[in-house]
Image (cartoon, rainbow, N blue to C red; front, side, top):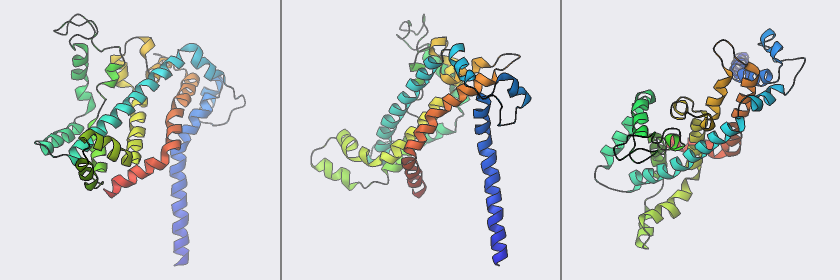
Length: 288
């Protein structure tokens, strides 16, 4: 019995090490490749070791493209998306969880059903709405003559300002909080928004941070939509900017991996700082 238990433990550790190796190795390879000279990238492509580690590839990233500008574009869009999703998602989630109004259940069901629609299906309609939006970007009252929201931060921020997942996620948390808090505040004369802002919102800090991490990661790593709606080089995000190192017949793997390492740092740092709240948020969701 003891031998069988020891074999089971050994097997578990072997499987865990194999899974960890498969998961971590690509990340380590990315870092090692970013430090290799171009010749070694092709001659020792799978090796993590090099005889001539250097930071030349990191210098090439900033010399080849306006990397800092792309970094700031992505940061502005990701942070704005976090703010809008936390605020609007919390506001809508509170309304569905704590307020009684006609059509609440059916509107929430429609909202949830929208999560089943693939994003690729809505890309063209969203693009047309943004391009022909009246009285914006040179458009007239009929939405003609200009570019609308295209090639502007709003083209990224508005479609993702409040996703269905954000509303659903925050609603689940508000439902775990007692209704007595709102009733007591209303008796004291608080408005509904004040009940939401001063009483309930501070209680969902783990949920808000969890949603913020997810939203930041999604916005920071977004590639397809920014590539479609942002045309000028000055407006490119970091993910779109890195694609410029891939040419038709050649790819500059060194600078590409160096830029990818830098692009990965914000999400890693945010998760390290806020992982306690992230784990709490996931735990609360599981209990719900």
